[in-house]
Length: 163
View 1 (cartoon, rainbow, N blue to C red):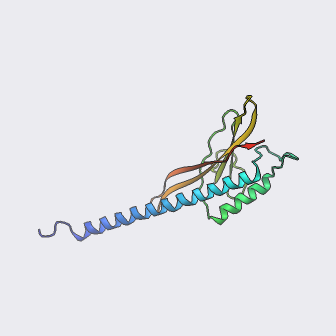
View 2 (view 1 turned 180 degrees about the horizontal axis):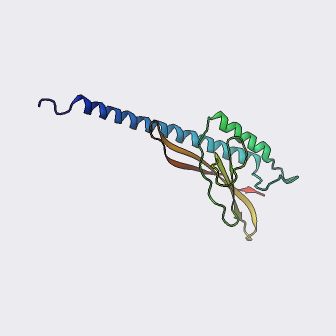
View 3 (view 1 turned 120 degrees about the horizontal axis):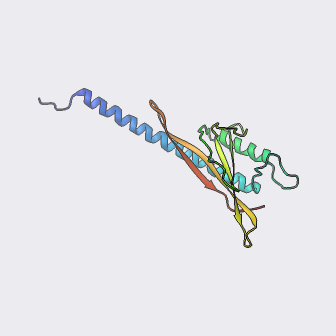
């Protein structure tokens, strides 16, 4: 009766604490990686002056999606970003596109590595003169034994860009 806690109970407590610590570290690493990728994608879109959400690039618009997507794919690969999630639905004038890690558009219900949302912003007289873009990337709580538990979104916005 001297020992109220045996070796087995202490071993279980130690294993539980190690799992909790590992989960916190995995979450922190995924969180910081997702925010770094989001910031890079926002910077790429802002430096290119916007993102053309139509199927083909418009001549003379100055927007070349192929270059923008290539820069984003390079940023994803440089940060070893591998998370995926579902993009929100488009509503009204808001356009939404999801992309995979290789730069191809997401079709149907597939999961995307990142989403770009184009939101119109009305000018003084009510006419749409500028847009801003939301970038959505995903990160998850990934515990080594249990795998992915929760999927979170990191959302960033560009400054208003004139059309």
